[in-house]
Length: 74
Image (cartoon, rainbow, N blue to C red; front, side):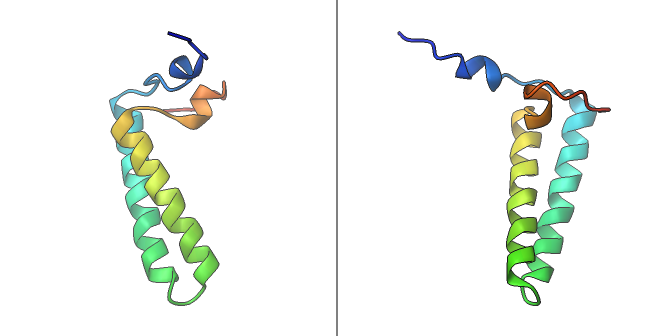
């Protein structure tokens, strides 16, 4: 088996509080995106994509910013 180092990048790196914060942020972005898509299509799509990504981070316990070495508060 060949290890490309990707699995270490995607290891869970946030705890309960961070997961809750990302879940709430994702839900709010998703709702805002669904509402906004009727008025400004590109902005609505960006908000929906950001919301879905934040929900993915919450469910997996993984944060992209932390995986890249950026220190986050939560």
